[in-house]
Image 1 (cartoon, one colour):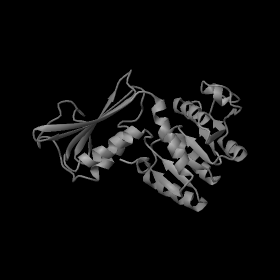
Image 2 (image 1 turned 180 degrees about the horizontal axis):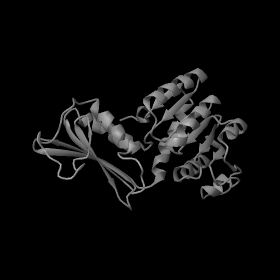
Image 3 (image 1 turned 90 degrees about the vertical axis):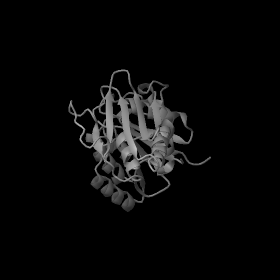
Image 4 (image 1 turned 120 degrees about the vertical axis):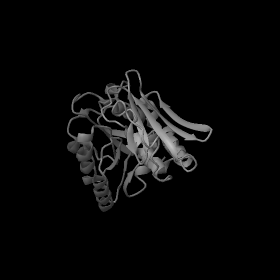
Length: 268
């Protein structure tokens, strides 16, 4: 049997962090060696995640956890304010970061790529680890070659802080690579209510819906003469992201440098 990959989880007490812990504990190829959270210190990580005890106690000190547990990979689903600092710390100790937090600047990603290469390790920062969402983005990019008129509508719960979502921005970037900038709608259109037409990106619009009871959905709508095309992806629970996170953990130990976006690991 191949040597297991040692995994640490930052943001272990969050909803995504708990799912990551469960996923790691269920995979014989992975070994949970550390769980870090600002609260819940001393609690067994398995109990925190709602499963059987695993013998790994939650700690509040990421640096100490990296030094003592010597993980191969750090999975980080914390906050924008913490993720960059955590990632720099992870790379410092030669631990490959897998980050699901958005908000990194191009300059930060470039700097992290340099640091990873100097350490001889890989890293992944991804706005979305859902394989279905990645396929939606790739299909939308292909469709944009033939349907340049497009709008994106993304739906999330009312507690989501950023708008548009990282997935919507990532989708827009995919689409923009395959179409010229076209300003859509009537040339003299007037918004009777400010923002009614949505956010402007490369000539098309992105609309963000925030409602209670909604988890995460996105629809890419293309219009053409006498026809329309809709590509939609729906996420119903956080467990749906775990196959992608699992794949990222296993891929990140095979290359060097920081990769932005999970799409290159998904065929489609």
